[in-house]
Image (cartoon, rainbow, N blue to C red; front, side, top):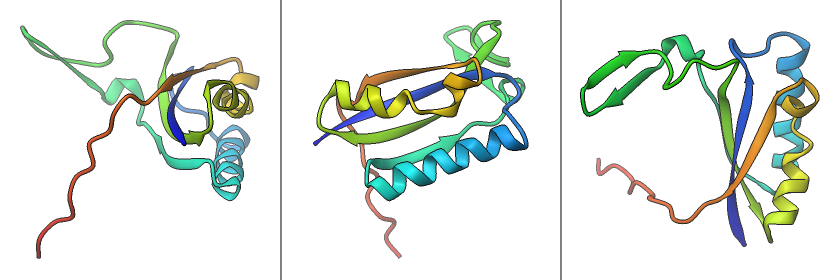
Length: 114
């Protein structure tokens, strides 16, 4: 089965209250279905740092209304199935968007040696 990264684009800062609960419930449904491989929420873009050849700057790469608010990885048989699952993300109904991209490769960190 292939894996797909779902990038969640939403207003910054992250949603709170009922909107946040909707994201937690969505993740729980995906986990129960067996499709969710991993999920991560990100801190507000104001706490980010951008690294370039010329140095490090505070904040996100570009000024924008929406930021990458989080991401998750799905196990899905194909892109169409991954898109159908991603379309149920609450960010879409809340005026944001999701981007679906196939995972080309993965680096898995070996367990730490005691």
